[in-house]
Image (cartoon, rainbow, N blue to C red; front, side, top):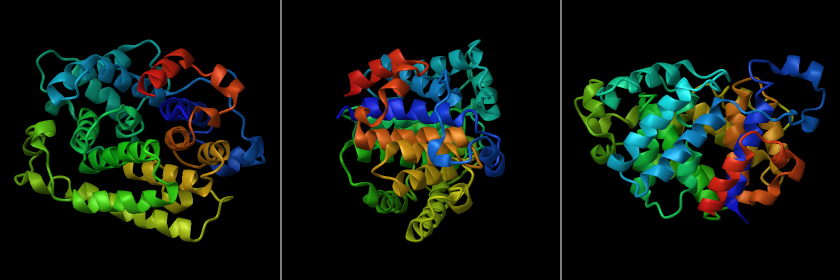
Length: 329
C-alpha cells in the first residue's frame, strides 16, 4: 500500500491546498469556491512551512540513524536552523519557530534555553508525521522523540503531548488500526501518560521552566488533549460534514486543536481521502496545518494510491517526498 509514501504525499497535498485558504473565513471562501467539495489543488502546488519543517525533521532522522536523543539532537538542531535561514522560508512561518530557531543557531546555547515555554502552537505537531512513519521504533522512542522535537521550539506541555498523539495517530494508521478506534486509543494514551516524564529524552527541561516535580509537567498538556478529544467525540456523535469543522473542535492554531480538527476531517470521510483533505482546507482556521495533518492521516490509512496522479506530479518537493516514502515503506 505504500503507507509512508501516501502519508507524506497527503501531508504536502493538504498543505498546498490549504495555503491559499489560510487566513480566510468560510464566507470569503464561499465567494471564490461555492462548493467545498470541488476545492482545487493550486497550480503550482506550493507548500508552506509545514511541509518544509516536516522534511527538516525527516532529514534529521535519516542523519541520526539510531534514534536516541544524543544522535537526534545535533542534526535536528542544524536542520531547523537551516530551515529558518533558508531563502525559501517565505511561506508565513510561525513566530515561535523563528524565535526558537534563532536561539538554536547560537553556538553552545542549550536547546532548553531556545524553547519557547509559553507556546503550544501547531508548529509543534504539524511537522511530526515522520516519527509515525519511521519503521522499527518502540513506544518510548516514538513518544520521546515526538516530545523532544516539539520542545526544541514549543515548550508548553500541550505542545509536547499533542505532538506525541499526532505521531501516534500516524503510527496506528500505518499499523492498520481501524480509523474508528483512533479517539479511544489516543484517550487511553493520554490517561496513561498523564504523570510520566521521560528525562532520558527531555533531560532537565521541566526544571528549567520552573517545574519542581517533573512528573507533573505534562499533566496539563494531557488534560487539554483529553478535553479536545471530548469535543471530537461530540462532533462525531452528531456529524455535520457541510459545516466548518473548526466550529466543533477549534481553529487549529494551537497544537491540540490542529490534531483534533484534522482527525475530525479524516473521520468524517474515512473512505474518501480527497474529500477529507478538501474539507480540512475549506475551513475558517489554520487551514494548511489542519489539511496537512488530515492528508497525513488519510495517506497513512489508504496508501499512495489515495492521491490523484496529476496532484502528486505537480507537488513542490515531490522527489524528496517520494524518496523518504520509499525509504520508510
